[in-house]
Length: 604
Image (tube, rainbow, N blue to C red; front, side, top):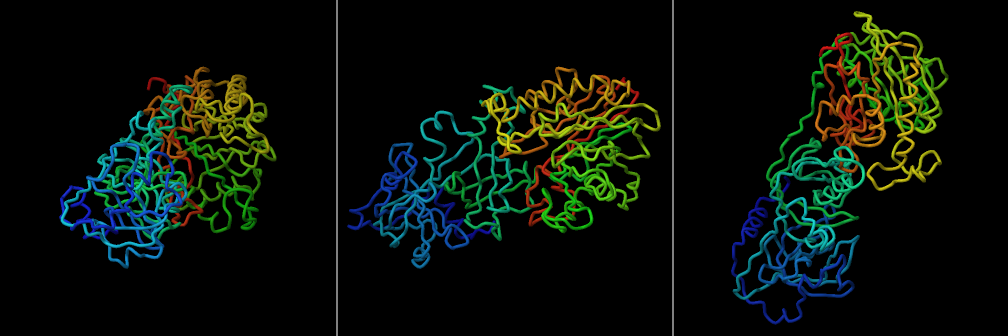
C-alpha cells in the first residue's frame, strides 16, 4: 500500500486509545485555540484570516509536492467539545516542510502556529512554526471515529454532508464497493458505496418521489477514496490500477479531507482489496441457434477512410487512436460470436468503400481466428446517409447464417424527435429454418440539456422526476416507432420483431414504458434484477441499452445477457487513454447486449 510500516504501527496504537505519558504543557499553552473553535459548526472557519496556536496530535503525514504538502492533526479525546457539529481535526499546510525538519511523526503531540484559511472549501492552517509538545507527564489518547454509510438522514439534515468530520481520523468498518472509477487515472480517486454499486434511481424505482428517494439515499451512501496526493495522473496509487467497478475494499482507515466540492478519505491503511468483479473473458451463455447483439461504438469515425482525416468530427483524434479503437471493437465483436449486431454511434458517412461501416466490416472479415470471421456483410439501405446527424445506426450480419429479405426501411418521423438519428429496420431469414424476424436498431435523444443548438424547454426540460432532459421527445419517438412498426415497414408479414439499441432511457422511464405498454418484452429486465446495468453515469448504474421483443419473438428467445467488458473499466483503458491496450476491454463506454434465439420454437 506504499505505507511506512512503522507509521502504521504507531497509528494503530493511537486508534486503540493506548495512553502515552507526556510532560506538562507549560506556559506556552496560555494562548491555545482549540481545533473545534477553528472549525466551527458551519462550512467555513469563523477564524479565517487569523493567526492561531494549537496543540494537537499528528494523525497523518502527506508531506511533499507529490502528495498534499502537509499533515493532519486532531485534538485528543480529553480536549474535544460536546458539539457534534464541530470537527476536531485540521489540515496543516506545510509547503516548507517545517514538520519534516522538526522530525514529527504520526502520534506526536505538536504545538503549531499559523494562519487559518479556506482552500477550495477545506479549512487549513498555513504553518509558520511547529515544535513537539511537552505535556508534563499527562496522559492522552485519541480515538478514530467510526464512519458508517449511508449517513443517517438526521445527521445530514443537522450538518451538510460530512463537514463535521473534516480533518478527522476515521475508520470505515464496512466492506465498500467501487461505484465509480472515472477519476482513477487522473486524480487517483475511487468512489465507494456500501453493499453494492449505486443504482440510477429510475432503473430501480418509478420516476418522481420514489426515484427522488433513491437519489437522496445515494447521496448519503457515497464517499471518495483518494490517493493522498494532489497530483494529476499520479505515478503510484494505494490500490492497484487493475481494480474495476464492483470490486470490494475492506478495512479503510484514513482522514477526511475536502477539495473541489467533494469530501474524500485520504488513506492511511487499507486492509484488503477483493477482486469481486473479475473481467469476464466471454459472455454468459444465451443458447439459441442465432445470437443477436447491440453495441454502442462510442463514436466510430474512420477519418477520410483512406488513413487520414484525423482528428475526425468525433471519436479518434489521430490515426493511432483510431487503430486502437478499431482493434478493441473488432476483438469484442469477434468474441461475442454473434450472427447479427446492431451498431450505434457509427459515423454517418454513407455505405461506400471508405465509409465507417464498410471499414468495420472489412476488419471483421480480415480477422484470422478460425471462427469464420470472413463471412460478414453490412446492410446498405440504399441512401446516401441515414438521417442528418453525425452518427447513425447500422447492421453487420453473418451471411452464412442469415440473409436479408427485402430492403431495409427507415423513417424520418420520429427522427426529428431523436436528434435526426433515424431508426433502421431489416427483416432477416435464418438460412437453416427459413424462419423470418425483423430487427430494428435505434438511438434516442440523449439527456443533455442542449443539443445541436436546441435547448430543452417546456415538456423537454428536466422536470425533477429523474428522467432528465428531452424525455418528452424520447417518449414521442418511441410511440412514433411503435406506430411505424405496426405498418410492417419492411413488408415481412411476420410478427417477430426485436428492437435494440441505446435508448437513453432507464428501465422505469416513459419511453421504455411506451414499448412495454405496446406489448414489447424487455428481455434483460425479464431475466435480470433491477440492479443490472449497461452504463455508468457519475457513479450510478443502470440499463441505458435495451432489447425489446414482440410477444411472438419473446417466446423464441432462449436467453439474454449484458457482457460487462466496458462500463466497469476505467476510461483510461479506452482507445484514447494512457492505459489503453488492443484488447476488447473498454472498447466503448456502453456494455454490449446479447440475446439467443431459436426461431420457430415457441415452446421454450
